[in-house]
Amino acid sequence: MQFSVLLVLCALVLLAGVLLYNVSFRLGIPVLIAFILLGMFFGADGLFKIDFSNYEAASDICSAALALIIFSGGFSTRWQSAKKGADRAILLSTAGVILTAAGTAAFCHFIVGFTPAESFLVGSVTGSTDAASVFSVLRSKNLSLKDDTASVLELESGSNDPAAALLMFIALSFLTGTASFTFITRTFILQIFLGTAAGLFSAVAAGFLLTKIDLSGTGFDAVFVLGIAIFAYSVAVLTGGNGYLSVYIAGIFVGNSSVPGKKQLANFMNGITGLAQLLVFFLLGLLSTPSRIPEITLEALGIALFLALVARPAAVVLLMAPFKCSWRQIVLVSLAGLTGASSIVFAVVAVTTLQTGGYPPLGFDLYHIVFVIVLFSIGIKGFLLPRAAEKLNMIDSGYDIMSIFTGYEDKIPVHFLPLKVTARHPWCGKKVRETVLPPGMLLVLLIRGSRHRIPTGETEIMEGDYLLLGTASAIDSAPETSQGTIAFAEYTVRQGDSRCGKDLRTAAADMEEPQLVILIKRGRKIIIPQGRTLIRAGDILVIEKNR
Image 1: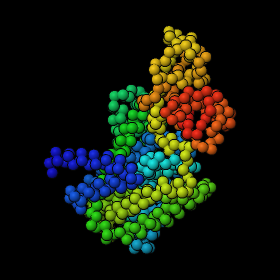
Image 2: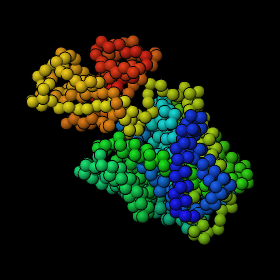
Image 3: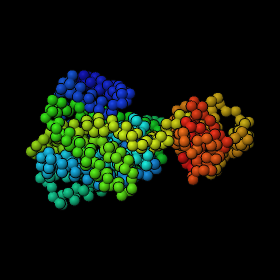
C-alpha cells in the first residue's frame, strides 16, 4: 500500500471517529462501540477488506495507547476531591481485581471447561474495570453520583490496570512453563517496587522542570508532559517494573502539582485520550473477524454474564460492605465494572507473547472471546449505567462530576483577571464607585493581605490590594496572586435546597464552613452578590475554593 494511500485512510478514520462521536452522543450510544464498529467497517469482513492480523504490532500500539489513557486519567484526577473515596477505590483496584479474576477463572474452568492456566488467563485479562470506558460514560453523560461514588469509580478504574497486568503476567508464566514461587514473588516485588519508583522519579523530575522552565504559551509544555508519560512507562518496562502503575502515579502527581497553563495541558491530554481510545477500539474492530464470532458467542456471553452478575458484584459486596455502604451504591459500583480497552490490550499482549515465543496455542480464541465480552460490557452495561443511577436515586443534581477532574475550573464561562494596585495606579485611594471599569467588566473580589471580601461601591481601594476583575468569556487560566492560584467551583441551587429563598448572609450563617460566593449566574445574567442578595432555585453559585 502506497504511503499516500495510507495517509488518506488514516485521515478518513480520524474524521469518521469525530463524526461518530457526535452521532453516538446524540443517539445515546456509547462512543467506544462506534469506534469498534468503525474498525469492523474497515476490517477483513467489512467494506475496505483490510486484513490486519499483526498481533505483535497491535500489541505495541495498544500498550502505548493504554499507557497514555492511564496517564491522562491520573493527570485529570483532582486528588483533593477524589481522595474521599480513595479507601474503597484502592481496595477495589487491588483485592477487587484479584477476587473478580478468581471468580471468573473458576467459572471458566468448572463450567466452560478451560484448563486451570487458561481459565486464570481469561480471569486476569477481564478482571479490571476499564478507565477509558468509565471516563467516557461519566464525562459524556455528566454523571454526578451520591456518596462519593464517582470518586470511587474514577480512582478504581484508573488504578486497577497494574493489578490486572500483574495477574496476566503470572498467568502467562503458567502457560509458558516458567512459573515458580520464586519467579512469581520476584515478579510481584519488581513490578510494584520498580513501577512505583519510576512513576515517582518521573513525577518529581517533571514537577521540578515545569516550575523552573516556563513553557506555558509555547506549546512545548504539552510536548513535555507527553514526553514524561512516555518516559514513565518505558523506563518502568525496561527495568522490569509495571509501566501502567508508573504512568498513573506520574499522572496523579503532575496533574495535581502547581503547573503553569494547566487548562491547556488538561485540554491537550483530553485530546490525546480521545485519540488513544479511538486507536485502541478501532484496532479491536480491525483485528476482529466477525465471521468467526458465532463459534465462540455462547462461551463468551456466558463469561460476560457471570462476570457482570456474579464475579464483579460478589467482589464489590465483600469489599464495600465493611464500609457500611448503601446497597444502592454497591449495586451501582457493581454495574460500573466495565470491561474495555485494558482487556483488549491484555488479550493482544497474551496472544502475542504465546505466538512469538513459539508456545502451544490456547485451546480457544481468546481475542474474539474478549471482543464479545467488551461489546456486551460497553454496549449493555455502559448503556444501562446512567439509567440505573437514576432508578437507584444515586444522581446528585447539586454536584458536578467534573469537579473530580483537574480541568474543572475551565468550565466557568467567566474570564478572571488579577490586578495588583500600586501607589501610582489611578484607582489607588479611590472608592469602587469612583472608578471607571472597561465595558462588560466587573470587580468581583478584593484581596487585602489575608482578607478576601466582595467589594461594594463604598469600598476604598488601597495600595497593595489585589483586585479580581471578571468578564463573560472563556477562562484562559486560573488567576494567580502572590498567595497562589485562586480556584473556583460551581454549585447549582435546586428546588428544596436549604439555601433556596435565603439571602447570602443568612445562608452563610447556616453553613458549618462559610464559603465566599464570588458570582451568581442566573440565566444569562452575572450578579455580583451582596449580603442581602436572595438565592433562587436554578442559580449557579461560583464559590472560591481557597477558603
